[in-house]
Length: 183
Image (cartoon, rainbow, N blue to C red; front, side, top):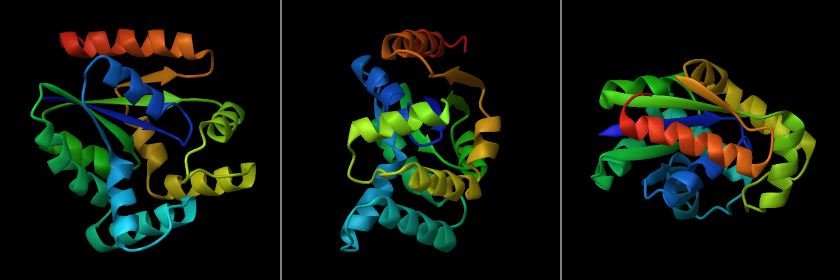
């Protein structure tokens, strides 16, 4: 099984990467879904704050790779040759995925802060931030989990600072390379 992990700051384009993979019939496992499920089953309202608190609780309880531990069975359940993991947040998660999936490939997504903020305001997810200050706080929280170190571990980085069409072209080309095994 070839597993392609996607890492990037909030609003950088991980979700678009996953959407494009889905159009190509590549299954996508979103790490945040495990956290959303945890928040909902604990009776909390889904928000950026509750997601952050749940993430911190899980990491405190299970270790820095907690969300990856919860994700591995979801990836294995796909039973396909290629799977995308969307939402890696720490170097510990990368280490776990690389040790568990011998054919693991990590894609970093880079995007300027102003572009990320504009895109977050437009996408309208219920757990999104609503101001630049909240985005900075979320970035710092995720950096505290090891996001920058995870980004540094990427096998390749895609820059998402232009049009959606340009990004989609770049992602499709990268996924073709990955599917052919040359990436």
